[in-house]
Image (cartoon, rainbow, N blue to C red; front, side, top):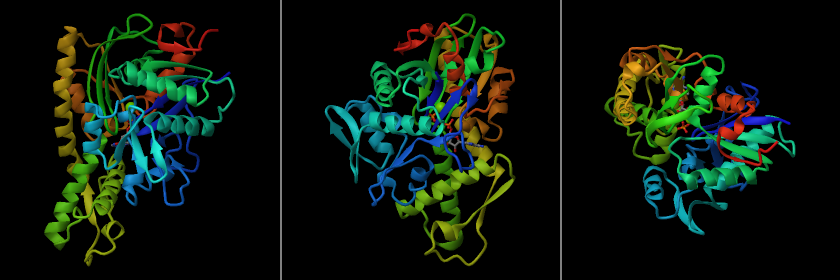
Length: 383
Ligand SMILES: Nc1ncnc2c1ncn2[C@@H]1O[C@H](COP(=O)(O)OP(=O)(O)OP(=O)(O)O)[C@@H](O)[C@H]1O
Ligand SMILES: [Mg+2]
């Protein structure tokens, strides 16, 4: 029977089996990543993954992203209110839980997670009736968020499911064959920053202390880049790309693509005519350079350090007691980020495993261990 490791991320869903990420989006440039996106176009046919994400600039209100931020939230709660401030969706009450109103009706966060789990596992080729999964959750998840994740696992037809904390999964990925005591897991994803101190001296590994910011990540970089481009275009062309929310969403999506390309290129062009065909474009497309990104990255990293300090002082551990730093999350590829984190700890930050796979891979390695019962919230996993 296949036991899968699944990272049900805010931005991407990743499935791994026996320590390797599986293909979940064939025919796409990054086939191991399924965007955690659902869309409800006028045709009323639900779209999942890349097809859904591409609709964000066209129809932001009916393109659900970052639904994980709302999983397990009661309607009217602080979490639901904060979510509504950051996203363009209509949030409604559905039997006491916060849910999304779309043109195809109400979608709950558990339903969204279920669709993502079903789609990812279907593409990974593991749709057997008796499949099991180890699913990752942030260390910050409270009981109701964990329960809601388990509910999605059940609804997706997993005969057995266990939850494991994301930093523990990352540490397992790195430490399957070696040993350290204190590891810091620095996880900067699309929407969320999570920092955890993990005691790896004994299995099961244990999160000693953690902190995070559910609204800090790559999305901020995309938005700031888009604002910079819009300011530049306003000064040069007297044309405001920020005036219309749909145009600005298209610009933000283009800036995300440019940001990822800047990991390997010095300079990337942003085609203004594709973003706003109505604009007065007479000259060349505007360019973004790596140095545009470095300043934004430095500000972002500085914001994470107060949480690093908080976690270490909570645990009574000094930076010099930290044996290893493991990087997870796609945004740790931002230029200069891992060097700055390494300098903070006076230690090289480990980045040798793919930061967008490392969580799912660790969960799949945990799944293969006989002492799985030591993990959190295992259900239906009895031999
Ligand atoms: N090469 C790159 N350079 C910079 N950022 C990148 C790169 N590749 C991916 N990203 C960014 O990484 C983010 C997604 O990371 P990841 O898939 O690890 O998040 P996630 O685990 O789904 O979300 P979260 O951790 O917030 O729950 C996106 O903002 C994406 O733009
Ligand atoms: Mg993540």
